[in-house]
Image (tube, rainbow, N blue to C red; front, side, top):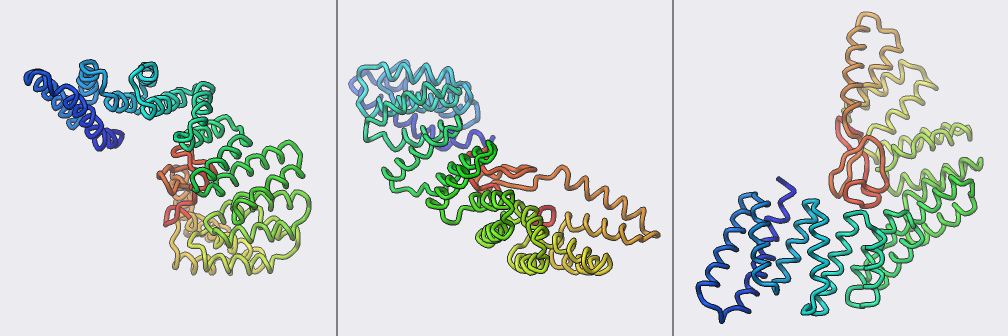
Length: 390
């Protein structure tokens, strides 16, 4: 039902404007003809409001056939077709609009933009790219065409083109694009790192920091590059800076950071940093990391005592699982069977639940994504907090 919120809210206005244009242009016609059209329109609107979209489409198509000048009606129909996944119908409708001789320049531009969006939805990126590139020559439509081209180049993983068009879009509109461009540079850095080209990766990371000085992703990549090169002090510095800038990404970088502390032989600094993060970050990840260090340095009893005290302040299913494991490791015999059952239940609770959620659209996932698979925003997927999450 939620998929029809847009048609219910906006389509009546679009169809109303189309019907009004028809009425204005044909007011010299007989009163009977206008009355018939009015009746048809309101019948279609009634279908739409009663969630009968197929019947509504049939009725509005008849209105469009009655008066070929109802351009807004065609646009609304095309958008509705695309939303329903009937991309072929949307393409044919918008192609017919583009071919009409009586469109204004603004209407023709709208029709070409709509056709390009149809091609994108159909996965015909080359056709859409050609249309939007041609539209860049028209100053009035350049920003919208640029934005669509950025989406196309993201889908094609042509990060250099995406960067160039994002910069042009920022210049044309004044809308800050630094955070998005930084992600594109990070994609190039990741590619170079996987190809065994650390210098090229570092160059792209520098460019990422130039456009977004606090880029979380660039900082994490920088830390991993430094760690692989054996520069643990630099890696620790990079990871700590990222965690302080945006603690929400602490669970992602904590394993790498702890490895760097160990290689450098500085567990005292590790404990100091974890204590700082426990104060600033509401999740359980730094608590579990600190528990592991306490167990290693002070023994299981002290770790059990520490974790118990922490969980009283911040209840957590993950923390409960760790507490059960610690209790079992301490050799509790009378309660062993109960603890085993509780451990299994905890594992089942955690295995099916998403641990990350997009801050924009609510998409849930078990693994972290820099690019939300649902709403296509960058850097919006973060750990879920609460008893069953972080």
